Image (cartoon, rainbow, N blue to C red; front, side, top):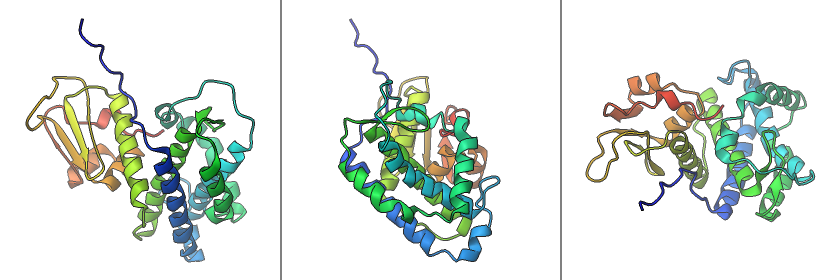
Length: 262
Protein backbone atom coordinates (compact mmCIF):
# COMPACT_ATOMS: atom_id res chain seq x y z
CA UNK A 1 0.00 0.00 0.00
CA UNK A 2 1.57 3.37 -0.98
CA UNK A 3 2.39 5.82 1.78
CA UNK A 4 -0.13 8.59 2.27
CA UNK A 5 0.90 11.95 0.84
CA UNK A 6 2.18 14.36 3.48
CA UNK A 7 -0.17 17.26 4.17
CA UNK A 8 1.73 20.48 3.47
CA UNK A 9 2.35 22.59 6.55
CA UNK A 10 4.59 25.29 7.93
CA UNK A 11 7.84 23.72 9.06
CA UNK A 12 8.60 23.94 12.78
CA UNK A 13 10.59 26.97 13.86
CA UNK A 14 12.70 26.91 17.03
CA UNK A 15 10.66 28.99 19.52
CA UNK A 16 13.81 30.27 21.21
CA UNK A 17 15.06 31.55 17.87
CA UNK A 18 11.77 33.36 17.28
CA UNK A 19 11.81 34.97 20.73
CA UNK A 20 15.34 36.32 20.30
CA UNK A 21 14.70 37.51 16.74
CA UNK A 22 11.42 39.22 17.68
CA UNK A 23 12.91 41.29 20.47
CA UNK A 24 15.92 42.18 18.29
CA UNK A 25 13.63 43.36 15.46
CA UNK A 26 11.51 45.36 17.91
CA UNK A 27 14.64 47.07 19.21
CA UNK A 28 15.76 47.82 15.66
CA UNK A 29 12.32 49.34 14.96
CA UNK A 30 12.47 51.45 18.11
CA UNK A 31 15.90 52.78 17.19
CA UNK A 32 14.93 53.48 13.58
CA UNK A 33 11.74 55.31 14.58
CA UNK A 34 13.57 57.28 17.26
CA UNK A 35 16.03 58.55 14.64
CA UNK A 36 13.29 59.90 12.34
CA UNK A 37 12.88 63.66 12.23
CA UNK A 38 9.47 64.52 13.75
CA UNK A 39 8.57 66.54 10.67
CA UNK A 40 8.71 63.37 8.58
CA UNK A 41 5.88 61.69 10.48
CA UNK A 42 3.31 63.58 8.45
CA UNK A 43 4.65 62.10 5.19
CA UNK A 44 2.75 59.29 3.43
CA UNK A 45 3.71 55.78 4.47
CA UNK A 46 2.99 54.11 1.16
CA UNK A 47 0.00 52.36 2.76
CA UNK A 48 -3.30 53.78 1.57
CA UNK A 49 -4.65 56.47 3.90
CA UNK A 50 -1.81 56.12 6.41
CA UNK A 51 0.85 58.66 7.29
CA UNK A 52 4.21 57.60 8.69
CA UNK A 53 2.81 58.53 12.11
CA UNK A 54 -0.06 56.07 11.60
CA UNK A 55 2.41 53.36 10.59
CA UNK A 56 4.45 54.03 13.72
CA UNK A 57 1.24 53.83 15.75
CA UNK A 58 0.42 50.49 14.16
CA UNK A 59 3.89 49.13 14.91
CA UNK A 60 3.50 50.29 18.51
CA UNK A 61 0.14 48.51 18.68
CA UNK A 62 1.79 45.31 17.48
CA UNK A 63 4.18 45.41 20.44
CA UNK A 64 1.50 46.51 22.93
CA UNK A 65 -0.72 43.59 21.87
CA UNK A 66 1.62 41.01 23.40
CA UNK A 67 1.24 42.04 27.07
CA UNK A 68 -2.43 42.87 26.52
CA UNK A 69 -3.26 39.48 24.97
CA UNK A 70 -1.20 37.55 27.52
CA UNK A 71 -2.95 39.44 30.30
CA UNK A 72 -6.30 37.97 29.23
CA UNK A 73 -7.73 34.64 30.28
CA UNK A 74 -6.47 31.70 28.25
CA UNK A 75 -9.08 30.86 25.58
CA UNK A 76 -10.62 27.39 25.48
CA UNK A 77 -11.29 27.26 21.73
CA UNK A 78 -8.95 25.29 19.45
CA UNK A 79 -6.00 27.42 18.32
CA UNK A 80 -5.69 28.57 14.74
CA UNK A 81 -2.55 28.19 12.61
CA UNK A 82 -0.16 30.84 11.35
CA UNK A 83 -1.42 30.17 7.81
CA UNK A 84 -5.00 30.84 8.88
CA UNK A 85 -3.94 34.02 10.68
CA UNK A 86 -2.17 35.18 7.52
CA UNK A 87 -5.40 34.84 5.55
CA UNK A 88 -7.57 36.56 8.16
CA UNK A 89 -5.94 39.92 8.72
CA UNK A 90 -7.90 41.82 6.06
CA UNK A 91 -11.17 41.14 7.89
CA UNK A 92 -9.86 43.19 10.82
CA UNK A 93 -8.53 46.07 8.68
CA UNK A 94 -11.01 48.63 10.02
CA UNK A 95 -10.25 47.93 13.66
CA UNK A 96 -6.51 47.80 12.94
CA UNK A 97 -6.60 51.23 11.27
CA UNK A 98 -8.60 52.71 14.15
CA UNK A 99 -6.10 51.43 16.71
CA UNK A 100 -3.17 52.73 14.63
CA UNK A 101 -4.71 56.20 14.51
CA UNK A 102 -5.40 56.16 18.26
CA UNK A 103 -1.79 55.19 18.96
CA UNK A 104 -0.57 57.86 16.56
CA UNK A 105 -2.72 60.57 18.16
CA UNK A 106 -1.35 59.60 21.58
CA UNK A 107 2.24 59.74 20.28
CA UNK A 108 2.89 56.10 21.10
CA UNK A 109 5.95 54.30 19.74
CA UNK A 110 7.21 50.72 20.21
CA UNK A 111 9.48 51.97 22.99
CA UNK A 112 6.49 52.64 25.25
CA UNK A 113 5.76 48.89 25.42
CA UNK A 114 8.99 47.17 24.45
CA UNK A 115 10.45 46.21 27.83
CA UNK A 116 7.21 44.75 29.21
CA UNK A 117 6.58 42.89 25.96
CA UNK A 118 10.16 41.59 25.81
CA UNK A 119 9.93 40.26 29.35
CA UNK A 120 6.76 38.33 28.51
CA UNK A 121 8.23 37.04 25.24
CA UNK A 122 11.07 35.54 27.26
CA UNK A 123 9.02 34.15 30.15
CA UNK A 124 5.67 32.90 28.79
CA UNK A 125 5.31 29.13 28.55
CA UNK A 126 5.29 27.65 25.05
CA UNK A 127 2.31 25.48 26.01
CA UNK A 128 0.06 28.45 26.63
CA UNK A 129 -2.69 29.51 24.20
CA UNK A 130 -3.09 33.25 23.66
CA UNK A 131 -5.91 35.49 22.58
CA UNK A 132 -5.26 37.33 19.28
CA UNK A 133 -7.38 39.62 17.13
CA UNK A 134 -7.93 36.80 14.60
CA UNK A 135 -8.43 33.88 17.00
CA UNK A 136 -6.71 31.80 19.71
CA UNK A 137 -3.12 30.82 18.95
CA UNK A 138 -0.40 28.82 20.59
CA UNK A 139 2.11 31.27 22.04
CA UNK A 140 4.96 30.18 19.70
CA UNK A 141 2.67 30.75 16.70
CA UNK A 142 1.40 34.08 18.06
CA UNK A 143 5.01 35.25 18.38
CA UNK A 144 5.66 34.26 14.77
CA UNK A 145 2.77 36.53 13.74
CA UNK A 146 4.32 39.38 15.74
CA UNK A 147 7.62 38.73 13.97
CA UNK A 148 5.96 38.76 10.53
CA UNK A 149 4.27 42.06 11.38
CA UNK A 150 7.51 43.57 12.69
CA UNK A 151 9.58 42.60 9.64
CA UNK A 152 6.93 43.59 7.07
CA UNK A 153 6.36 46.99 8.67
CA UNK A 154 10.08 47.57 9.06
CA UNK A 155 10.24 47.16 5.29
CA UNK A 156 7.33 49.61 4.96
CA UNK A 157 9.42 52.14 6.89
CA UNK A 158 12.38 51.49 4.60
CA UNK A 159 10.29 52.06 1.47
CA UNK A 160 8.59 55.16 2.86
CA UNK A 161 11.71 56.90 4.18
CA UNK A 162 14.26 55.75 1.62
CA UNK A 163 16.52 54.73 4.52
CA UNK A 164 17.84 51.16 4.70
CA UNK A 165 16.35 49.30 7.66
CA UNK A 166 18.80 47.23 9.75
CA UNK A 167 16.77 44.01 9.99
CA UNK A 168 17.87 41.42 12.51
CA UNK A 169 19.22 38.69 10.22
CA UNK A 170 17.40 35.88 12.05
CA UNK A 171 14.14 37.84 11.98
CA UNK A 172 14.39 38.26 8.21
CA UNK A 173 15.35 34.59 7.81
CA UNK A 174 12.45 33.24 9.87
CA UNK A 175 9.84 35.43 8.17
CA UNK A 176 11.15 34.68 4.68
CA UNK A 177 10.94 30.95 5.36
CA UNK A 178 7.52 31.05 7.03
CA UNK A 179 6.03 33.04 4.16
CA UNK A 180 7.50 30.57 1.68
CA UNK A 181 5.92 27.73 3.67
CA UNK A 182 2.55 29.50 3.61
CA UNK A 183 2.78 29.56 -0.18
CA UNK A 184 3.54 25.82 -0.20
CA UNK A 185 0.49 25.19 2.03
CA UNK A 186 -1.84 27.16 -0.24
CA UNK A 187 -0.41 25.89 -3.52
CA UNK A 188 0.68 22.33 -2.69
CA UNK A 189 2.68 20.43 -5.25
CA UNK A 190 6.19 19.91 -6.61
CA UNK A 191 6.22 21.42 -10.09
CA UNK A 192 7.64 24.85 -9.16
CA UNK A 193 10.69 25.53 -7.03
CA UNK A 194 10.69 28.90 -5.26
CA UNK A 195 14.10 30.10 -4.11
CA UNK A 196 14.67 33.06 -1.80
CA UNK A 197 18.40 32.86 -1.09
CA UNK A 198 19.94 32.62 1.37
CA UNK A 199 16.93 31.75 3.54
CA UNK A 200 14.28 29.61 1.83
CA UNK A 201 13.55 27.03 -0.85
CA UNK A 202 10.15 25.39 -1.29
CA UNK A 203 8.38 23.35 -3.94
CA UNK A 204 4.77 24.15 -4.73
CA UNK A 205 2.00 24.11 -7.38
CA UNK A 206 0.40 20.94 -8.69
CA UNK A 207 1.82 19.38 -11.82
CA UNK A 208 4.61 17.03 -12.82
CA UNK A 209 6.85 16.28 -9.84
CA UNK A 210 10.46 17.31 -10.18
CA UNK A 211 12.87 14.62 -8.98
CA UNK A 212 16.43 15.48 -10.05
CA UNK A 213 18.53 17.92 -12.00
CA UNK A 214 17.46 21.50 -12.64
CA UNK A 215 13.73 22.00 -12.02
CA UNK A 216 11.79 22.96 -15.16
CA UNK A 217 9.93 25.76 -13.32
CA UNK A 218 11.97 28.04 -11.06
CA UNK A 219 11.16 31.30 -9.30
CA UNK A 220 14.00 33.16 -7.61
CA UNK A 221 14.06 36.47 -5.77
CA UNK A 222 15.63 38.23 -2.79
CA UNK A 223 14.15 38.41 0.75
CA UNK A 224 12.98 42.03 0.54
CA UNK A 225 11.20 41.48 -2.77
CA UNK A 226 9.63 38.31 -1.35
CA UNK A 227 8.33 40.26 1.66
CA UNK A 228 6.78 42.85 -0.62
CA UNK A 229 5.13 40.25 -2.84
CA UNK A 230 3.79 38.31 0.15
CA UNK A 231 2.42 41.44 1.83
CA UNK A 232 0.87 42.92 -1.31
CA UNK A 233 3.32 45.83 -1.51
CA UNK A 234 4.51 44.71 -4.95
CA UNK A 235 2.65 42.97 -7.75
CA UNK A 236 3.91 39.88 -9.53
CA UNK A 237 3.70 41.70 -12.87
CA UNK A 238 5.85 44.59 -11.65
CA UNK A 239 8.38 42.32 -9.99
CA UNK A 240 8.88 40.16 -13.07
CA UNK A 241 9.01 43.20 -15.35
CA UNK A 242 11.70 45.00 -13.33
CA UNK A 243 13.75 41.84 -12.88
CA UNK A 244 13.50 41.62 -9.09
CA UNK A 245 11.85 38.21 -9.68
CA UNK A 246 13.33 35.76 -12.16
CA UNK A 247 10.81 33.15 -13.30
CA UNK A 248 11.40 30.39 -15.83
CA UNK A 249 9.05 27.64 -17.01
CA UNK A 250 5.41 27.59 -18.08
CA UNK A 251 4.16 27.03 -14.51
CA UNK A 252 6.43 29.60 -12.86
CA UNK A 253 3.72 32.21 -12.38
CA UNK A 254 2.69 32.82 -8.77
CA UNK A 255 0.32 35.73 -9.38
CA UNK A 256 -2.72 33.61 -8.54
CA UNK A 257 -1.47 32.94 -4.98
CA UNK A 258 -0.14 36.38 -4.09
CA UNK A 259 -0.33 38.25 -1.83
CA UNK A 260 -0.15 35.80 1.07
CA UNK A 261 -1.19 38.21 3.82
CA UNK A 262 -4.66 39.70 3.88
